[in-house]
Amino acid sequence: MTPDSFSDGGRWFDTSAAVKHGLELIAQGADLVDVGGESTRPGATRVDEAEELRRVIPVVRGLASEGVVVSVDTMRARVAEQSLAAGAALVNDVSGGLADPAMIPVVAATGAPFVVMHWRGFLEGGNVQGAYEDVVAEVVDELRARVEAVLAGGIAPDRVVVDPGLGFSKEAEHDLALLAHLDRLRALGHPLLVAASRKRFLGRVLAGPQGAPPPARERDAATAAVSALAAQAGAWAVRVHEVHASADAVRVARAVEAARTNPSARGADGEHGAEGAR
Image (tube, rainbow, N blue to C red; front, side):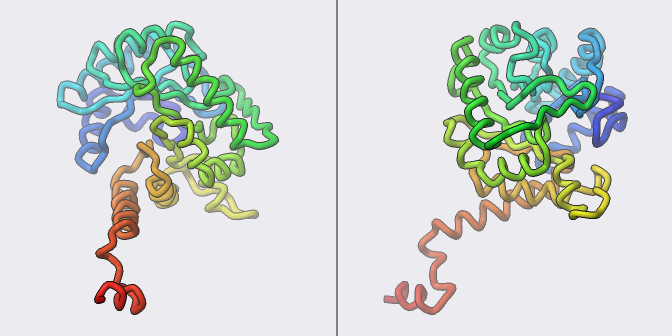
């Protein structure tokens, strides 16, 4: 619900168009729909609270009334509180509760699940703050500390989801390293959300060393590849713009995993087949 989102800003800015699009995403295989009223892309200027509420609440209410499981993407406690009252089921705060000190008490009081993303501050002015000596170790440590603070604030352990914050204060090599070590993030002991869809690092991968990155909306196949890898690594969810390809990719990853753990699948080669025949 923003005019300036990096990928599809302005396409769903109208309430009725946004609700219709959310229902289309469900029809394509989405399990929940994430609704946000301010862009968090590098360089984005924050909107005020009243404008964020004006954008978000009617869409949350409209989708929830249709039985959609809604996640609200906000860094403001009042927006989270009113969204939950309007029917949202989950709060996705890219600051992990750091941007608004009232966020954790509000979420704790409602019992809603809470996504804790790795965050090193606002990205206004394009400030990336992407200096790491060991990005995986540092992100894991910083996420662990933030989760401990959230738990101390009263949110139940089984209500916490973690997100490595791909693209937030990170360069392409940092994002790729985190994807290569999702097992280290899962070791934190909470469901893992991977939000790679159409992000800048995928454009860099597709462009190669000398090429120009393709536009955001031409990165859906690359996003689906990440979705398959995330599913294989045991992620709880992926956050995507285009559902169909990622839903198919996850189905294939699950089918391969089932074949790996199913003894009756053996026999595809002669050695195992002979053993199975005995």
